Amino acid sequence: MKDRRQFQFAELESWLNQNRVTEIECLVPDLTGVARGKILPREKFTEDRGMRLPEVVVAMGVTGEYPREGPYFNVVSRHDADMHLVADPSTVCIVPWATDPTAQVIHDCYDRHGKLVPFAPRSVLRRVCELFDQKGLVPIVAPELEFYLVARNTDPDQPLRAPIGRSGRAETSRQAYSIDAVNEFDPLFEDVYEYCEKMELNVDTLIHEVGAGQMEINFFHSAPLDLADEVFLFKRIVREAALRHDMYATFMAKPIAGEPGSAMHVHQSLVSKETGRNLFSNEDGTPSREFFWYIGGLQKYIPSAMALFAPYVNSYRRLARFTAAPINIQWGVDNRTVGIRSPVSTPQARRIENRVIGADANPYVALAATLACGLLGIEQRIEPTQECTGDAYQSAYALPRGLGEAVTLLRAEQDLADVLGKEFLTVYTEIKDLEHEEFMRVISPWEREHLLLHV
Image 1 (cartoon, rainbow, N blue to C red):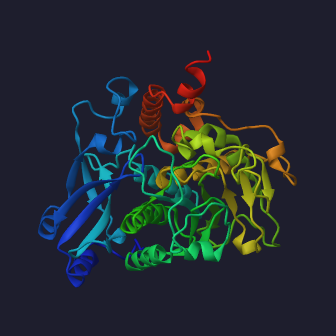
Image 2 (image 1 turned 135 degrees about the vertical axis):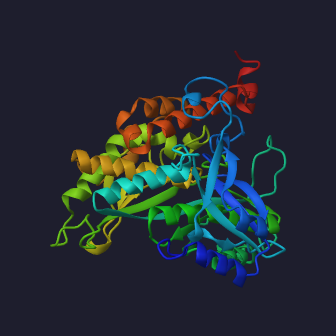
């Protein structure tokens, strides 16, 4: 991504001219992480950069529905008021799969008084980063995003299965870190890396994960808003590349029964604005008070934030014992059975990894939430529990077991509301209640198979 401090609208116009752009995709991430917006001719974008969209566009559920009554309308206007969208010039990049020269630009949402719309995901992350800035702290994050490649499936009643690779065969066993298994999909990943290069995304390592057809991409560490934008755009890239190779890419948390789920592990650290020092390490290289307080904040607030980290009914299928996903909020050094891990590193690179977050989480919301938990820990000087040096799967569950429970906990947590914004959490929890109600109206195959004639 381009430097936000330097790349402004004058440079944007020059960039569009240099790339002979004729169309522009004006993008807004909604609560789900879907790219909403409009496609404009270049001339229209130049003349009317202040695009408008209804408020509800960023306040819908995954099915496109929204509440018809209740607290939702204490925040979102009943008369479907417009948001004023303003382009972030630093996010402009080419759309590499478009036929005509096309650019895409991510926008921020403002109300008619010039204030950020508080329930837009990008606004929430901006709010949290500003709180860190006021304290002289710079958060640094690095996501690791897992996803599955699956064969095309147009019937939602049929289970997903691994796609056919170059060999003409589908994976039938687990191939963790296998180079050959990744090479099965070389043509697809060549497109992915080409698209990332053209869009200037700073992706790092690609590996094959545990599941059949499961991959992971790592991102270089950077500022939270930059990384949220990159994850948002990367999901578009992978889905598009997969379609061009006659398969799907999915970021569902648990797309295939019997296979591991997909996570978005987020490494995070804090740097002092004044000194540039990693605040998680003392000058002698030992872990600092802030390091432990940050862990304490994650431990205290992750259970209440789970609806933000695991936003769908499917998300909770991933969080099961012995499946490379945490079931509690214990912490440990170089321990992948815990929910909060500190990788082995130099003092300058000391960081904390939140392993609870699912790949299905909205990157803006998830990064805002995990940073909020850590910030509260530092502000309240919360001491963590004793380090877990054994197998955390042997301990009890300490996370919500379903979306309904998670939403109830989130709605009751005042401290998170103060950091993330009451308006945002009102809209978010109302939407999640609605999605849960929609799901409960669906009768599953399991219920028909086991309950139809047996109860």
